[in-house]
Image 1 (cartoon, rainbow over the protein chains, first blue to last red):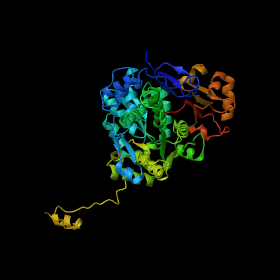
Image 2 (cartoon, chains in turn red, cyan):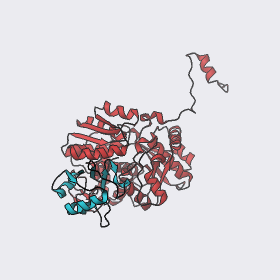
Image 3 (cartoon, one colour):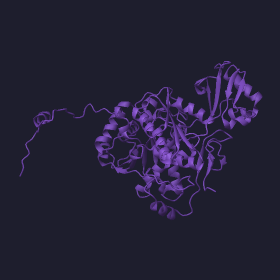
Image 4 (cartoon, rainbow over the protein chains, first blue to last red):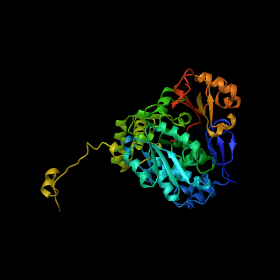
Length: 412
Length: 89
């Protein structure tokens, strides 16, 4: 018998941990509930002896089979001194999740879902994706010997189309927004016995998001930061970060601490940030997103209302940034910290800039921003027109002419 | 007659059928028809005020019913799709 079970987020009805994803009573989404561990000292030691991947947190995850040998997660927590100086933050950290196997945090959620798909006996994993998830599903399927079918809007970035194909997935490009893809996949999921990671296996899939905060807490010496800044698309990572914080305290791994969880959305698709700003309890869907942050372009986020409630409960906020601010932020974090992020990361950093400059983040606060996707997937989103760039014939005089030495250097 | 497409989890409440034909010509009439023919299904779909319950997602000819009012027309060629809370993302 697993030590965890499923519970409906709507009516609180409980169910055994099978591949059910919808509450038969109220149609609400189900989530995994883990009872607290009897000994936090034993648990901490077990984790610290574990592999240098998200699987070190297996005791806190809904897994029954063998732990896979795969290098997903346990990504660097960078002490961002140079960016911190620019923003007036003395203890700023960046969680660099751009270095996962398929170069986004989606490898975490898929790691959980692929494992559960195998446990439940599925031979095909599938998803609706804005791009990163498609790559992560396709890569995991290749690693686990499963078949992958991925659905994406036909308008996403070329690199995010090529990657799933290279990994051997069947790609379904849909003419429409992500929300239209989502609806189609919700219908297909009713008809095909495939493990749709973000639909039929969603209770387990979202558990992978928690591992970001598990790692941050361990990397900070088993403590929670004062503030997190997180991008919001469907809101699943945001909401499950709140769940992770609660579980870390319940399991006795960290002391209770006031953690403010800030969210960031692109202004061209900011249903949750707009609802936060207007004081509404429920968001109004965005029908036609217009933003360079394609991976955050979800107009009807599944966990949007739960994200709103969490932001208010943690005394934080959800902000939005326009495309120019997102481009500037991509450049800022690249120039100061040497991390090249995609527009979702740019949105997070733009949100961080906004929060720091408005005084919402105290100078001495321990602040962690999640960088969730790699900029090499979205090179067209970057503005490098102001950078120094010359093209010359292969001759020294041409080089000297193009980049003249300003001062003579005396050699002792 | 218009088609009402049901998700697996709701089919037992409509005699196991994946698709039910309905005569309703707008969303308000659909609610009345479901209440009349499948009261247990209506219980899951509508709250006491007749509004869709929180976790029900409804599309009329591909249009999210959240954008439509209760007088929105349903034609004999229409398809009304019921889904649980849409996840994704």
